Length: 359
Image (cartoon, helix red, strand yellow):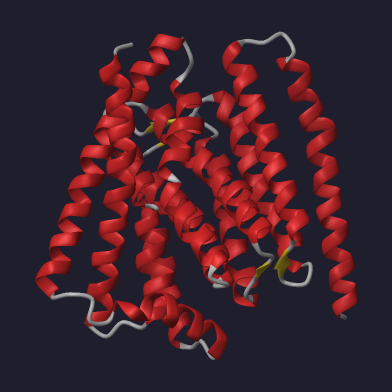
């Protein structure tokens, strides 16, 4: 591995984050200029824009036939979005959760997460599956726009207006089109360099592309979500912090996997390891949101700390597996049979007690 590999890895990450920032800023400005409400901008343009790095990396990986990288990127990013981004945001300030999010968006995220198992059970997410997922992204976006126009909660409207309404007057149409173009170029170049350098690193250290996708690539492509959610939490814009993480997960599953499997020459191959452990973990993390969110429609600090601890346990699993450590088998068994069931029970009991208290 040469120094240039590390340089291109870092440059790829920087271009991805900067490209997403320019794309979101330009697209949001254009949307508000043409009369789209701040709420719609926040729920669609920004949520999609922060998922743009995952889309770029997974599409490039899929086109090159690197299925493990594409799948690992989506699964790793979705786990990271909930456990780290929401966890970190909740530690900074307890997060309020909008009832609409709990009643619709989180169940949608859970259903789509579960859908990944039967779609990939035969070891392949083919083009037909990809069209189904991409079509779901269109339907979901249209529904978000429809629902946002019916939003009656003035607090929610004010929160999004404060964050995205300031885009009004944010430069000329030509300038904002330029930002969009620059952002897209950054995403394309960044994804190409990140994928190429990550594959080289995987070969040098003898680890699988799935591991690289679950770790370096997943964390790197999730940086826009980190910035958006943490800044929103610090500013007290708590619906945005939670909605961004959940919305990005839905876009990752529908859009990123959808378009990735469409452009892949032979579809996206899904490894048995991913079907046996990583995808079920992603599903479990999605399901864990419901009782946590239902417990007073808040994500408390202790719940945020538990989320962060869960991510640490998951990363330890990835590292032990990649290194071939002799303790790996016992560690994985303890996670599946003791730790994760115990955490699930804690969240479930907390959610039930909160529901009874509210009744």
